[in-house]
Length: 187
Image 1 (cartoon, rainbow, N blue to C red):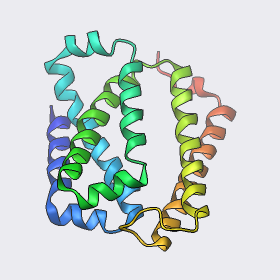
Image 2 (image 1 turned 120 degrees about the vertical axis):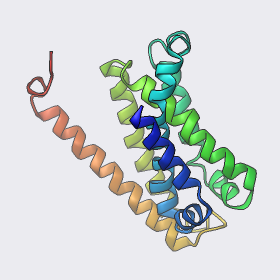
Image 3 (image 1 turned 135 degrees about the horizontal axis):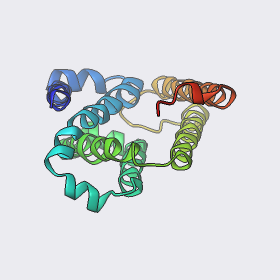
Image 4 (image 1 turned 30 degrees about the vertical axis):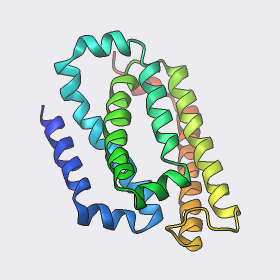
């Protein structure tokens, strides 16, 4: 239950107007820091819901695939430049961003990840690697302004940050493939 309390404290901290305004003022921090922190707060809060409503998660997300699909859909939606713009200009969209990333993405992610098999986890891993590569090239390569609330230089910085994330994912993938993982498994 401590995890859920920490997640709730993190969520409350992230929705404070000065904190939210600061995190949303720079594009790369908005997308690569605020949004993942909201998902992480939901990830921590999920433990409360798993203990409180175990039957719901068993019926709804028995093999982890529905929850992971919900997480991926929510995450992809918030990677759309128009969605980021709307979150900065429309109050109800910003409220939806906080709610959806925390409770519709973070909670299902926690419940789903342990239930997924290794092949499904690999698919999610490859999906995120490709997403970061595509986003990087999109934000670097397009000459016009994609997000109305951010400058082109911030857009390019986000693109390079996305490519850096993709490089980290690729390096981790090589590490995973070329090391003996049986040393780390506890049975």
